[in-house]
Amino acid sequence: MAKSRGATDRSSYPNAVQRVIDAFNGLPGIGRRSAERLAFHLLKASKEEAEALASAVVDLKRLVRHCRVCFNLADDELCSICADERRDRASILVVEQPKDLLAIEQAGAYRGLYHVLLGRLSPLDGVGPEDLTIDRVLTRIDTPGDASVGNAGGVTPEEVILGLNPTLEGDGTGLYLAEQLRTRGVRVSRLARGLPTGGQIELANRAVLAEAITARRAMGEDGQ
Image 1 (spheres, one colour):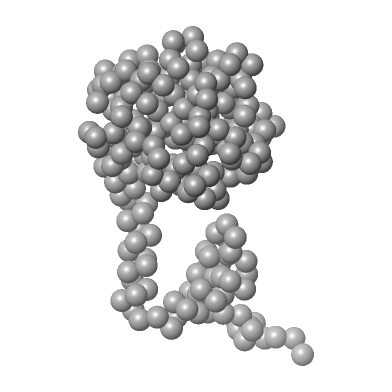
Image 2 (tube, helix red, strand yellow):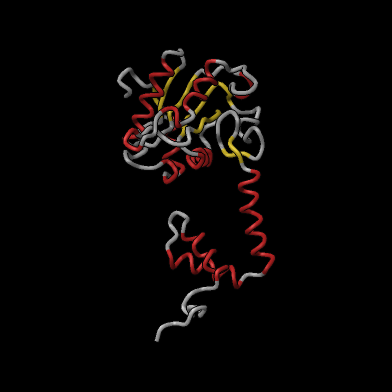
């Protein structure tokens, strides 16, 4: 028998529940079943717990920004690393994403500054230098004393360490950066290949990252 107009589908969730499921399902790594479990977990949670989660998400979008110097995540104009006067401001370690920065920080072997590219060069995907923050790291070297876009503390960088993921795109990005940096007279090095080719910095353990930092070597004209 055909369902009468206005009748509801008893197999569907209420609209509010479905919206939450769809929202979770749109997140990376969250499938339909996991999204449903999360939605029902929130239904069972207290009103205070659910509102705390909602408030945290709102604050994430409202308060978190990119550091104006290095593009790390921050809740002020400068991230905690750029604002720390105890850091070696003459050294900049370039990484792809904030999560890579965090992984290196947890290794505890590096006390300089960082620069986050927010990606890597990928011509096949249409990602070029203008889509990353490459111009800003070069500005930190060219005009370190510029109050708005210069290096933290106004110190001229002496070394730039390329801490990019050892992938085809990461290596290509490193070669491009090395070419740009050499014309500026800055020393260029890269993390030692204790990191496996094709691997991800965020997945490396602390010992591997510490060794890669301390055993870094200068890049030759061929990028090796």
